[in-house]
Length: 98
Image (cartoon, rainbow, N blue to C red; front, side, top):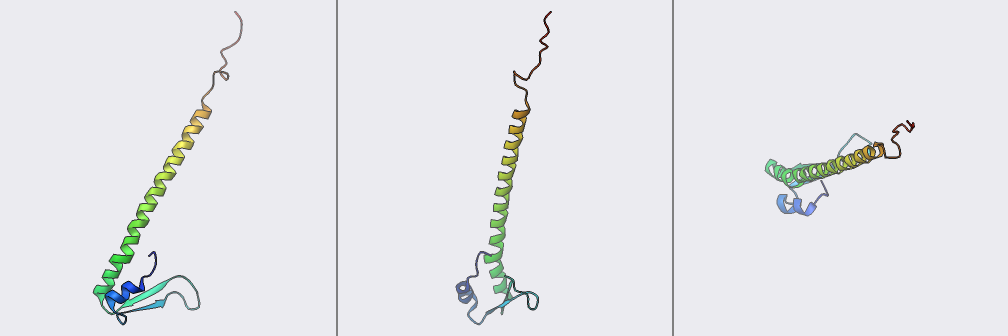
């Protein structure tokens, strides 16, 4: 979730229709939060608006990153292949005189 939009929650659920609490083990600080909704329909709307959109964005970014990494690997493979090809100076044609 990019950021929590309390204004969206207030506008769609009403200020008394949702609650935000920290999540996690007792005494352990982390970035996890819990959001409680008075209405299950509003909870579904929240997930559709804020959570599923992030998943699609994350998937798109992961795909782009993977494509970039594949292109880098292909470029490195081409450079290695070019470097391993013998040059005319490296070829021993048998310099024996007949």
